[in-house]
Length: 67
Image 1: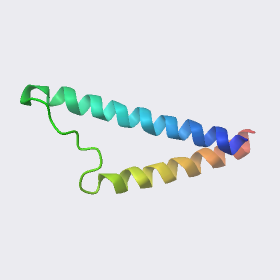
Image 2: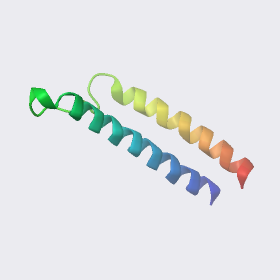
Image 3: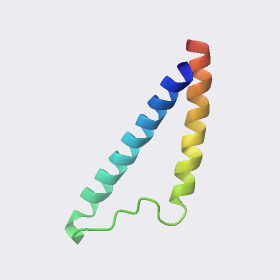
Image 4: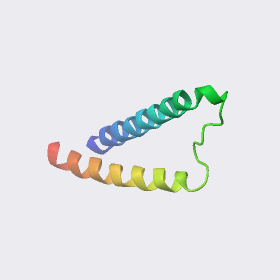
């Protein structure tokens, strides 16, 4: 159960950070018209995958100690 809670929390965090980045990018470039938001272009998806795995590991480890 603790692992599920940690997983949901980490996924929610990643989605919030991702949304914040999208909002920042769009507001930064809004004078240039409607831009393509570079969600997973180039190697950015690898960075997000590594970040997600690291956060899941930290969250699961922390949940084991907390619960």
